[in-house]
Image 1 (tube, rainbow, N blue to C red):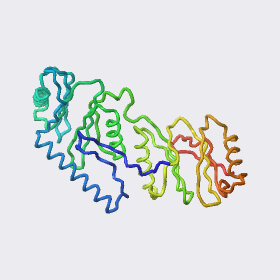
Image 2: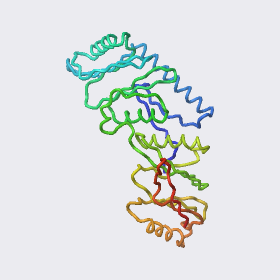
Image 3: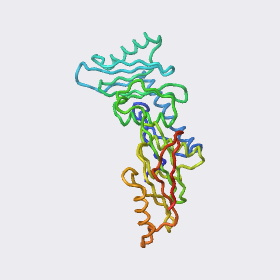
Image 4: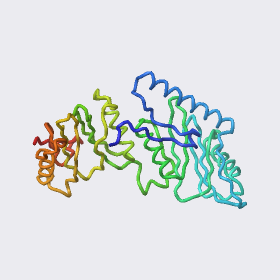
Length: 304
């Protein structure tokens, strides 16, 4: 089973030079504040290093003397940006200088930061505004790094923009809807969550964690027993054995009728003479979990 407190890898080298991870500590705790302070110090360090380099991110080295480059420049205080694609120049530095000149002509000020990279089919540039009010841009050509950046924006509720995204037509910015069944296997407590419009399951888990905290639950006491995309439903059996352990079994409701599913587990757990599988309490969730007109999950809870 997948722990609900998943520490997801988020922003990568071009944004902060080191990987940034979601805060793994209980919100509001001293460790939580210490972690945030440490990460902000790392961000400030990377800002200073970039400023010392004039805000320029060098492109990869190539042996040919003329290449097509993409370039993106922006102003960190205003969020204004300019991009140019497939620029034919002898060096990336020449492309960057030309883009900065065009930025100044258009906005009347110098761009503070920017990126240059060799042209490819699926580039991505995302921008986020940090707590100081300054904008940072992040560039990658890797789909997973793009996904992590968007997930970070979604789960942290940041002001983010995506001025350049070659992947958008393929996968969108977050058009997946997830359902989660989370359980405490010591106490038998459980909860159901519906998380719409996120980019991946890691973002869905993080959003569910936030909902749990708002409800007064401690996410560390729960595990994600099931997570699946909306459109399919599960039959779920959740029961307590005579040894005090809560267990979960499930099947896709589209592949097996509820009556057959229920009979299977009634026979396996209630009638088993082995002892371990005999249960003393439990319930079934039929077609878990439909969503009503208000976007709330419906339980369809059935006692044995």
